[in-house]
Length: 189
Image (tube, rainbow, N blue to C red; front, top):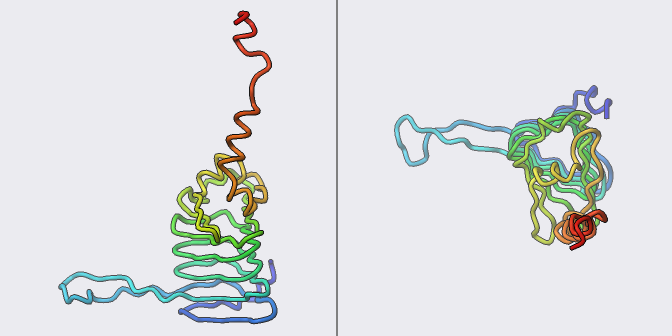
């Protein structure tokens, strides 16, 4: 991980790189955002045009430093630091070692995969509004994973199956968490 940060092989400007068989180890990755005049010709108005940098290693691993400003990552395993501003991450094993994930980051977890946030602190800079999408169409916000105590203090592996069956797991945990010393027993009811 440290080598990818030190190697200074930074990718930017909307580059598209694909490695069919093998791994990719790069430094920071950055897309390209441009303010352009309004396409309808309105004076004083601008829009933002985004050019995604895309890194793809469908049968391998991508190791990056910071990823910023409109980037798409797609690999079997993705290891990265911070994810900032409109990032799309698709993989079977997604490992985030940094402390920052912004609200507009989307994770697409493949079947049988897992995601983990290694933040050693409270998880404060991992946005509650980022989304984890599953192949079967289910979605979960990071806020729900924080409530389940799966993010912060080193985190835990969050598996595809856990997210897919989360509602049933929570219901069965509630049902089985009955107290042996209920008030009904205390007052002979």
